[in-house]
Amino acid sequence: MSGAPQVPTYPALVQELADRGLLTARWRQVFDAVPRSRFVPADVWRQLPDRCEPVVGTDAWLALVNSDEPVVTQLDDGAEDGPGIATSSNSMPSMVARMLGLLDVEDGQRVLEIGTGTGYVSALLCERLGDDLVHSVELDPVVAHQSADALAQAGYRPHLRVGDGEQPWPGLGLVDRLIATCALRYVPYALLRQVRPGGIVVAPLAREFWSGALVRLQVQANGTAVGPFCGGATYMPMRAHRLPDLHDVHGKGRSRAAGLDPARLLDLGFALFAGARLPGVRLIHKGAGEGVQVWVTREDGAGATAATGEEVWQYGPGFLWEEIEQTWWEYETEGRPDAEQFGLTVTDRGQQVWLRDPSEVIRPAKA
Image (cartoon, rainbow, N blue to C red; front, side, top):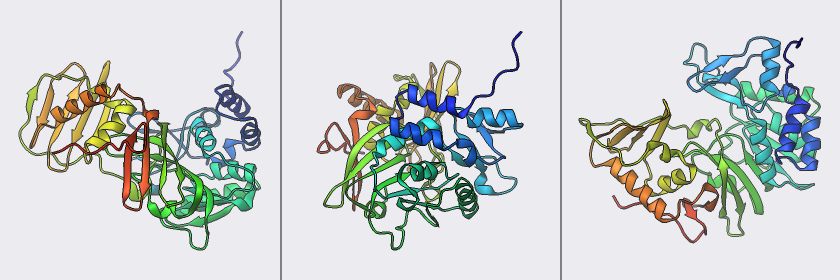
């Protein structure tokens, strides 16, 4: 007879991360020493495709916490009776491991974290570097208070601050590493100025055409930062960097046959390319049977929607779907490069996506 199903354990989760090659020997020791459960509150939710579902019961709570899944820890910025949108979470442990690996910290280096959240990443950094070298800022005072309590109870005392992570930390001086655990629409130049030349910034970006990608930047002597994209990443957006889903669309719809499967728009390599070629075009999607349905809009009122195997409907001025198809053919001409062949340069004038080399900036298509 088989007994009751075993609840997953944290050591098993860490072993899984190590087996996947996500932890060096040193980080393996750190993860083993910092149980995730110490930084997850009692009331949590599981993120489903269309909603957040409350987690009920100790076994269900432990099963989620000790799995490689995000754990939603706040809805609607903490407001009562909201629509139930996730606004804070404890990130997937595999994503945390990836980001900490990309951060490439060394003994004695000072780290600034943007978005304390539950305090789990701060605790891992404290275990690796020591409390005094870890600085973390959180905008939400309730979340900040909870994470400070969790950190203290676990025996960690990093430098914590309640405030806007987009703004410089007064009196902090230069740090060696900066990690953002909330998604940014762009890398604020004010953050780069807090990182020493040669220092590293790891952050998830979420632009209008694509849902999220990790970038690893190295700060240069002239104050700019350059580096590659390192795969996909989905994080809660920094509050000041949130975007509405779509623009208002104008005009009567008109249909035509689809020349491009909309599922191809979701490839991260193409999304990075198209986001640079078609700035201001927003895209959202959902699963639809065996394929996907996408909606794309632009500020001028143009829009289009397409589902796998069905006609395309276009609205407003111009022919937005044709522009997207043209961008796809350009992407094909480049050899369909994957996301890791793209990179980002950030200066005091903004940021630019490039392909294969920082000198090969992807310019916006002519309107």
